[in-house]
Length: 267
Image (tube, rainbow, N blue to C red; front, side, top):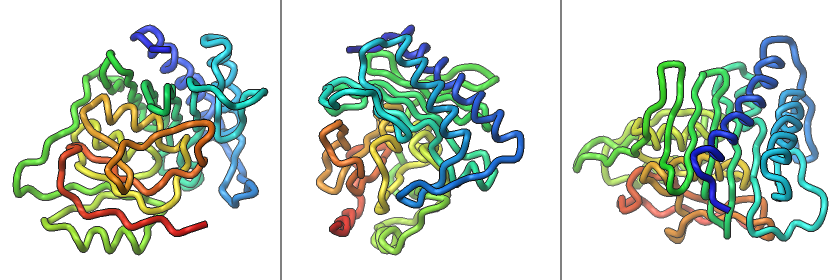
């Protein structure tokens, strides 16, 4: 399964419909409750999930859907499937800082071959597919994305999580052989900032799930960047793989010389 521009636009429309549901909740008073893993859940997560599932089932019948909040019925053995986070950055949503996203990715043979990342409160839509390229759309128009190649000796622009710091990240920064600046951002927007040339690298030592990263990885890869595990291999996905990702680094320049990632703790 390969998405052309029309298919990618369909994914964009589905994400935008979910974004409208999210913003409807965001505009009023809302409450959150905790899931079994202690992560927060809101009405916006569930409403967005329902809209995305309905849209994908109508536009791409028979394709398995794995979402953070639900999964298609039947045995999950598909090699081609959609990977969805209906509201990435629920903590940012609860803080009302606008840095939350809708993520929809198409996975084929473990690889994110298409992805849409919508930041509805910011009015920013990122979308990409193999053979189509990577793009950003705002009210001002649509522009092609290209990850920036840092000038030799220039300051490294490091992205980090707004809600998930770690001692491992501090140690990684201390091992950098160059000067750096650090900017925090929420949700999958960190990948997108690299894809549009506003940052160089995002090292992630804390836990993430497959649906947190797949769509934004597709955008970054099609913009010329990469998302690599501790062994330097592209981050991969699958219904038979663990839900939790290994530690990774998202980079504008896949050949950049960077400190090694620390190994994930067992468990």
